[in-house]
Image (cartoon, rainbow, N blue to C red):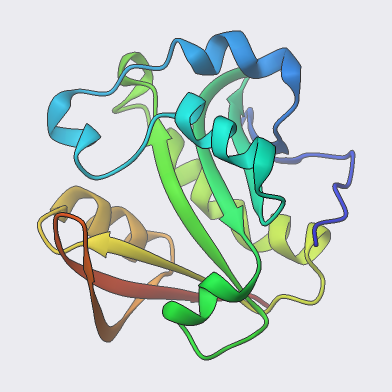
Length: 169
């Protein structure tokens, strides 16, 4: 379970923070092109699920205090579908608002992930995720920020998912 440290992780005006209701309006207005919607979920959809599922921890990527991106870190037994490591977290639903794409926010946010996890999930030593084999931009992003393709595969709703991992240290 996350400890929700109040001091955010920052880099170049970008920081990661746990979701709170002050971000709800901005996140509800997120837009993703159709080509991206097939690979991820909108923040508002994930926030609805998090209301009834305490294993979902919504995280906001902020730039100058404005939400530009979003993802969820999951804890719990579902993670064991992706890794045998019981201390891992599962990253799902990374998105950057369409109007903010191409500005490096996904990379900056993911570069803050290691320290964010160390601070807020001290018992976790790994983050895993599944990326669709057709989602080449996401694969490139995750590779640039230190995630490694494990070689494991899983079938998802729209095809083969590649399992990536990031060791936390």
